[in-house]
Length: 269
Image: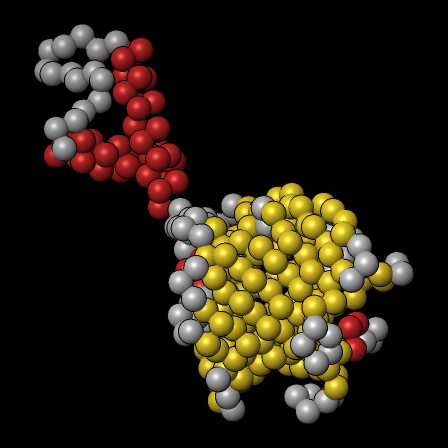
C-alpha cells in the first residue's frame, strides 16, 4: 500500500513537472482511446526511472576540498595527542605551521613529547599542490629534530588527498609512486592511499580555552599501505570549514596488536 501511494504521488508530481516543462510520457491517452497494457507499462517505467533520478539527485552533494582548508596565508594549529598503552610514537603534542599560497600549502609539522616545551621527537615538512580538481601531496620531507636539515625526502606522484567534487560514499586516491632520497641513496617505492567520504558531522572541542563547535565537518576514512611513514594504517579524519583538520583517530596493527592514537585540535593562532 505504501509503495503504491508513493508511486502514485511521485507520478503525479513528475507528470505535473513534465507538463509544465512541455514534456510528457511517451503514451498520452484521451477519453475513448483504446488503452494497451504495453503502453501503460512503458509510461510507468519512464516514471519509475524519473523517480530514481530524483532520489539520486537528492542524495548527492558535492564537497569541495577548498572549503575545508584555511584561507589564512599563515596559520598555526596545535593538537593534543593521546595514545593507547603502547605509547605509540612517544608524542603528546603536535604543532603545525601552515603556509598557504594560491597554488600550494606547506605544512611544517613538529611533534613533541612532554608538551609544547618538551623535546621534539619528529619534524616533517609536507607540500601540497592546490589543483583545480584535487588536493595533491607532492612532497614529504623528514627533517632533523631542529627542523633545519632534510634527512630524507619523498617526491610523490599521484597521491591525491581530496577532490573538488567529493560525494558521500565515493573514494579518492589510489596507487602512488615515491622517489626516496637520503644522503646516500635514491630509491623508488610504491604505495596505495585511498580515502572514502563518510559524510558530515559537527565537532565540539575545547579550542583556545573555550568550548567550540565546528558545524558540517567533512568526515573521511583513509587507508594507506606503504613501507615507510609508520607502515600501514587506517585513519578517520574530520576537516572543518575554513579551519582544516580538527580531529583524527588513527589505528594500525603491530606485533599482533591493534593500537590507536587520537589527535584533537586545542589551539589556533
